[in-house]
Image (tube, rainbow, N blue to C red; front, side, top):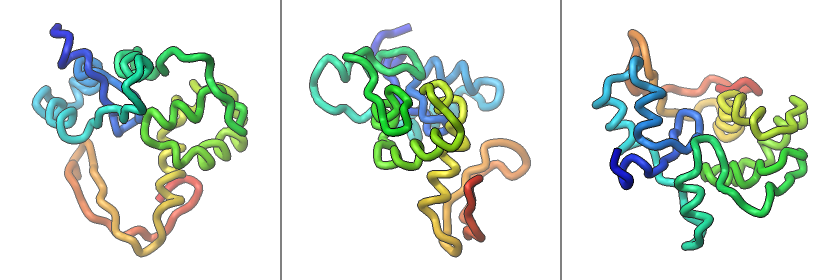
Length: 162
């Protein structure tokens, strides 16, 4: 595998994890064909936002999927989960740290792995907090008979999502 294209990491918007194209193919092949995955990579997966030109950015870009780059030690947030704020910032979700901290406290999460495992639930909570009933949202169905993109009107939101 070539170093450049295959080692570049992008954020998979489905779960917020940094992955290479090869890792993305490993995850989704069988559900989607190679052309769909490559299009998803090009059009949907975003490069990690670089904070500066330091070596830390380079380390983060090439860190194993789902792991933070090495640093001086994870920072604690008010939820008590080490590294949570850095993990959210890596995914351009730093503005939602309070929502995630509340989820951590309510669910007794003390490790970043617990946040990663439950990120779909957390994303639904964040999304629900940002959308009001009556607003229109774009919905993407990934599999099945209704696969495609649609516009839907939000009827209501709760802690589970929309």
